[in-house]
Length: 119
Image (cartoon, rainbow, N blue to C red; front, top):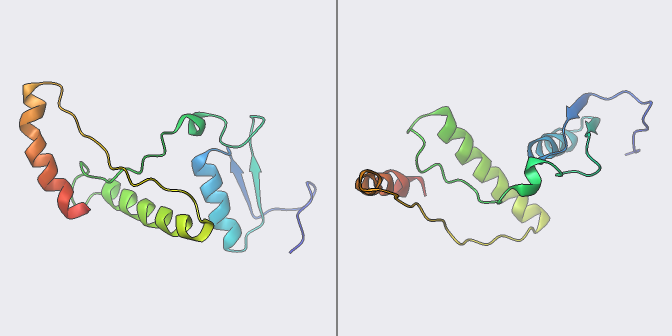
């Protein structure tokens, strides 16, 4: 496949080369689209994505059946697939949910019960 030149036509223009923009550009490119990514910074992942902690959210607190939970679970599935394809490093260290007061502590059991079936 030839590398498109700046004067060529593109099927899709992605504005922003952050984590989401790069993921969108990758997906469309793999599907055969001619994609251009436009970024104002001097490098990709140079804005908010640069400060990303890279922790994959489990969706433990998203409402069952919600769009949020579906998106989190699908995103996790896609990351696992990309991780395997590109041989990316991954540290399965888990995460902590902390309670800062008695009211929050009282809800921890409920959060755990909600989180377990979601993996």
